[in-house]
Amino acid sequence: MGIENVLHQTKIRHLNWAPVVRVESGSSIREVLAMMQSSRVGCVLVTENQKLVGIFTERDIITKLAGSDVDYSKTVREFMTPQPKTLHPEDSFAAAIQLMDKGCYRDIPLVDQEGGLLGRLSVTNIVDFLTEHYPQEVFSLSPHSRQKFAEPDGA
Image (cartoon, rainbow, N blue to C red; front, top):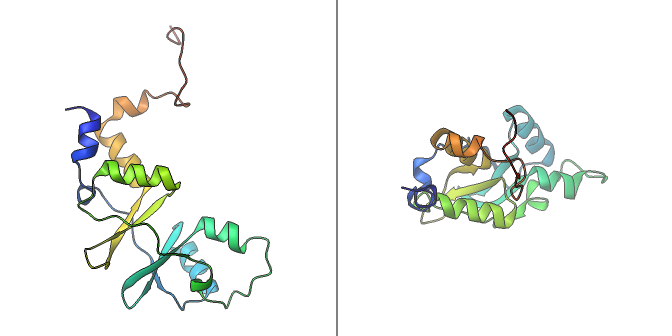
């Protein structure tokens, strides 16, 4: 079976998911930044009453906080990305890759049918899966996707 078929048939539930760091929407930016730093994560999932309402990422820090005179007691709700795109564990691995590529996302929240937060899929989870299951294909890739060599390199 080819890699493309596997990507379409493999469900997200079969992947290892990234650790979830969740915060309530009323948490201060100071608290959220400290939590991200201590947890060593690039994003937190923002909830209200156990339901996902937003995501706060390193990109939000750069575009909304960095270089600004910000009151760090303000809530994460004021700076988060509301209503983030989500996936379900039954979605395909290919759907995850397509969504991440299209939106330039590094993290996608995973929710159940009712919108309850289940987990987080990270680009690292995708890379880990690909390198584990397709090491030859991954390690043989050129550093530039359209790079072509006229002849083999080396001896």
